[in-house]
Amino acid sequence: MKYNLPIYSNGDIVDRTDLHLTHPQIQELLDAVCACVDNGEIETLKEVAIDLWIADAPTDTHNGYGCTDDAQPASVNYTIPAECHSDDYVVELKFDARRYFEQASDLVLQELWECDFGGYYPADNVAEFFQKTSTEAMFDYLLHKNRNCDVTGEITGFECRVDSDAAKLWIQKNRPNLFKSLDKD
Image (cartoon, one colour):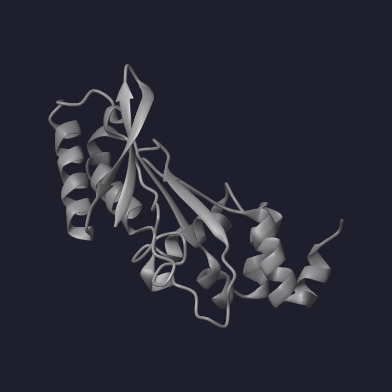
């Protein structure tokens, strides 16, 4: 997979570089970052922020958000862009939330609509749904980052946002009755 990483100088992003990593390499990188923070070798996590997003994914095997396991079947050619990030912005991911919407109940989609598709628990559930696939790197990071939270008392969480326009269009197309009951504009 191809990841685009920021290059920092004096706390500001000055450039970006592409890095090709396999999933085991991502885990090794996260382990190394956490070890450096634990040892005090890195003062702030911003020094090694990992801005993960998939660039130039082949369209025949990827859905445009870099997740082969979430690739769209030929019969459904519609994506619902979503992003999640750790609260400290060390890990930021973009992914396709379509599979979550396909399996979600009308009540779950209504709760997402009511929180404007982000910033609250209904949206966090979207990221959690993909924690073994698209958002695994973020949850792996949080597991490592928070492993000493009993000592420090500081827990790093995450936030998820789903593109509201795309989500509403998907609901309108696939759940028209729900859309009619929710769309008050």
